[in-house]
Length: 266
Image 1 (spheres, helix red, strand yellow):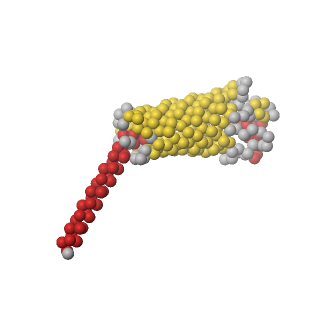
Image 2 (spheres, rainbow, N blue to C red):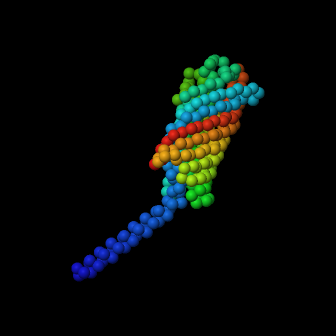
Image 3 (cartoon, rainbow, N blue to C red):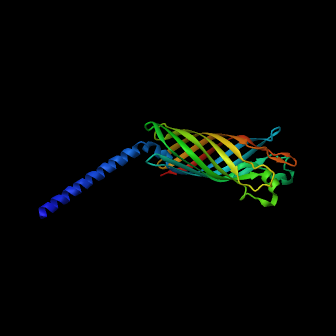
């Protein structure tokens, strides 16, 4: 009887060991499809960016310039799910005065990305093992709007904490891993931005569509140290003209910019 129990225990132990080994092999096989990219896409970083944009009211134009800081956390999971979360805040802004909002004076502004947090979540598909990856994703964010139009039309009823957008859309990212040090990517998305500002009844909400193209690179320079760089182009389309008693307000039409970052992989 004792021998039978001992033999049964040994057989159970051997079976459990074999199952664990098979599960471990399966897990490694699952993660191996993305492991080369995970060395770049599991990172957190701090960045500094600049933008220069064109404004229009339909007949006249102006320019704006800004600087901002950005905190990013990115992760590519073993199963192929990818997420990228960015939190940003303007540190400098300049713009020509807007004749449509004279009451606001020198605080004129038309920058729908004063600060906010935005997330991309998608699934990565391997096109060329260890070298080429495409990731369709969904986009969701909350962004504060710096708008002299809102301040002019809502007056004391609003401020920066109340003037914000819910942003949602979709995009895709094509990533090419050159080697263990260099990685480049092209990102394209379209986003609808729904204004939550409490503007006076009868005035148009400043909802808009944005289309962003980004070309970026990552450099794993030493151990877990990663440097990054981006260049991007934004195109904006406002759903309605923002008309005030003094004319049509200036709104962003397009902008170009760049960002450099330093961070750590994990």
